[in-house]
Structures are given as structure tokens and as C-alpha cells.
Length: 301
Image (cartoon, rainbow, N blue to C red; front, top):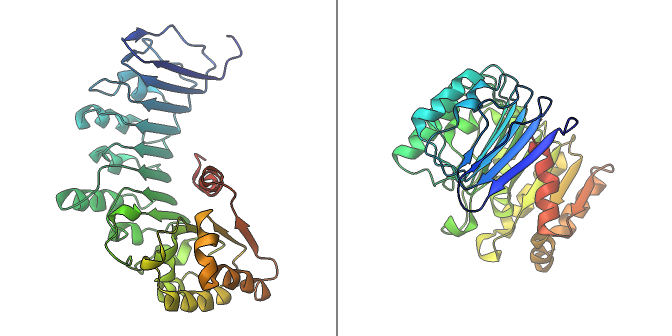
């Protein structure tokens, strides 16, 4: 135990009292039924993941982790009041991942936060959408933002106004009614080097992407079917991509090449290599590999 750096703790049934943890521990992942954490988590912890821990309040010990840089909350129902204690982590917390959790108001107080991932959170509509937009507007220091199955069909205006270097905007295809709207103009286009979006969204965004002169990595995420795809838009996008001199990598999730084949769209991307001899084109072999590989650009660093 003296050399242990990472621990994963979980319980499927009744509450469990956890033992004391090694002082040199740097990462911990806790899941399952209510976990009674030790009176004091090791101050050395810099990465913490909590999954469905079954308690109404964030454990008080979390806010005392003065070295915590990365926090993941998944399917946690902590009250907004208890999450306010995260303010004490503002100087150190640089990465926050929320899965199936509503973004709390305390988000705006995390002034060191650089990397935010919102995945499968309750859909932001009406007042909730306005609240999310207001929170994002206060995170001007963000450099990476991933919105997956978390918002409506349009990128939140405040997100488009951020000077992001990495953006993944992946609304659920099931929520789309007809062809998706294009990406909006905004400050992110001047700074973005990594961009992922649904294939049909990118195809509709040719005019907007003319501003993305610093784009290096582009990912065509899962393709939702030809009914949502406009081949004319695609031809326009091909022309824009040929002018992006810095482009070094284009990647596809596995469904894309087979869906594109009847329209010759994947061949079009290969044609780009005549304009960019050093361009790498990736065709992922599995959905898990595609997801994991591109999301490495959004990891907790």
C-alpha cells in the first residue's frame, strides 16, 4: 500500500466505510452506493472521479483537496448548495467533466478552469439554456470545451464567443429535426486548432470555417444518414478545407466512410492530400477507438 498512486473504490449495495488511504495517493475513483469517505482524503490527490455515489451533498473532504486539478462527476445528484464548496478549488482546478449532471452555478467561480466537458447532461432549454450560456460567458479562460448530447442543435452563443483552442460540439442526432444548422461565427474560429462536429454540421458550415485559418485537426463525427446531408454543402466545404494551409489531420468515425462512399465524399477528402501533401487521413476501425482517439485532445491535461 505504501507505493499506491491510484485507487478505485465501489459498492453495489449498502453504504461502505472506507479505510484510510495512502498519503501519497494522487488519483481516486469512487462509485456505487453511498461511500463513507475517510475523514480526510490524502492532500496529494490531484485527480478525483465520483460516480453515482448516492449522497445528496458533495463530500466536504473534496473541497479540502488543495492540489486537485481534475474532477469528474458522473450521475451525481449533489445539491447546488453543497457544490458551492468547490469555490475553494478555484486556484487549482483546471479540468471538470460532468456526465449526466446539471452544470452548477459554482462553475462561474472556477477561475482556473481551462478544460470543460459536458456529456449527456439534461438538455438545456428555456431558462436552463440561458443559465448555461451565462455560465459559459464567465469562463473566458477556457481553452477546451466538449459538448456531447448536452445542448440543443445550436452552439451556445457564449461558447462561440470564447477564445477556444479545442472544441467538440456533438448534439445528439436523435434530437435533430432535419438538416442541422451550421456552426455560428465567433471568436473561437480565430483560435481553434482542434474541431469535432457531426459530419452534416461541418458540411453546412463551409462559409463559417473560412475564418478558421488556424485549424490543424478536424474530426467528422458519426454520420446520421443521407437525409440530413447536403452534398452541395459538402462540395463547398471541400473547397474551404483545401485553402486551410495549416490542416494536418482529418479523421472519421467508422460510420462515415461507408455512408460517404455512394456520394464519393471520402474520395474528396483523399483529394485534399493533393493540396496538403502532409495531411493525415484517419479511418477509425471501431467506434470506441474513434471516440477515445479524438477525445485524447480533450483529456485532463
